Image (tube, rainbow over all chains, first blue to last red; front, side, top):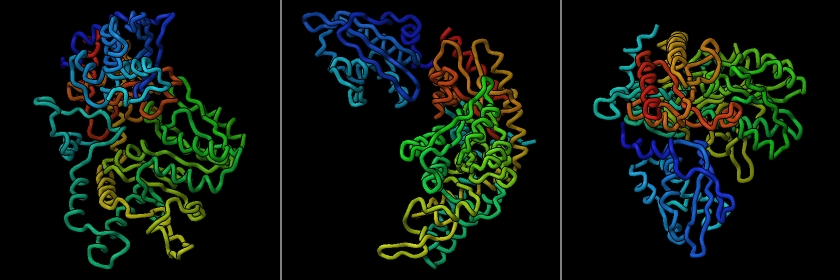
Length: 131
Length: 407
């Protein structure tokens, strides 16, 4: 099977380590990809130094969107919020270890878009956050 | 019966491999059909030999381009049995045809509180224009419900009709469920209730014999690109007296008889609705597509698709975890929208794509219909005159592969 469905992606899709919802939380944001109905909610807790103490995602959608959300949660725990603000499209592609066409890229980047809209405290998630 | 192996030779794209050794299995004709060589060549020849602007110059090429453009219109009129080619208005596509009715006829004829009946299985193109009008004019929208087995609930339709609708606008064939709606009956009932009718025939004209006079509809809309023709051109058919009474839609050249600084007089039909330089090469290609389909016979095409669809439904339903939406093959065109338990439709489509199998995944521009069935998306395989049972078999083995991967 093609690289797109590398074992790591199927594994994170089927057995996510960070699926859930943190309550209480310091950051919460959710958004959908209207084209395919992928939906991601992210909740974060931060510590006094401005680091991510814990992170969870919830939602539904394709393997790419859900696996990338799980990998992203894993990657940001313990990281300073300021560092998270710098994450971009290439970081997600590196985590997934694949190249994606324009349609599936939207699936892969949904979780980053939601995360950045949350940490910036924006009212709406925009595609420019992940360009 | 169609000789599908011969037909496939007419389509250059089927010589293409998606990667070395993997041939293209194209199961997405509901989105757009592939194009036979004679359509491609007709457009190529037009640009090589006859290109000029139409209805203007008197030079040889202008005359030739005008003739080609108008001959195509006559072919299309004959194809749908329109009484006159003047009732065949070129548009960009089905969507623009529906918008033409919404902007011209409806704005001249509908006022606040007037009821427009649609159905729950409409494509966004037959929902949004009316929602825009609802916001602008305060018209009311009523919806014929879709039953669990994917048919229109005609009893509910009759109840809606008792409220005196002004327009009934509905799809002849659903692009998701494949349901072929009883258009003649829906139109007859609408007329008895005093309503005007508009048929979204984007999915029916390419696949079935559609006769606008037998249907008796007031308006009918379709696109070339779903019926072996090019993108960028479609048709609005309308009854003469309605089209004549309608105000123009887009203003500009070609739609006028006379222009002064502060006034204009509109041109005759169909030009009244064809402002600006149209898609001339596309009209020529559209005419060639209609010739192609006519030479094969729409009844033979429909019979072939029915056979493939019946076979596909049977094979798909055998796969554990697969759910196919819509009615039985008897009421259905060549569309099979399905879900596979535990796997998102995008993943299904993407994995099939790796074996050269093109299916569509998403809500297929029918989001309300998907919501009704509680689904964010489905995968959709659709069939046309060039598809074979062998391709259905490859689809089925592809789905088994998906199951294995996600198992």
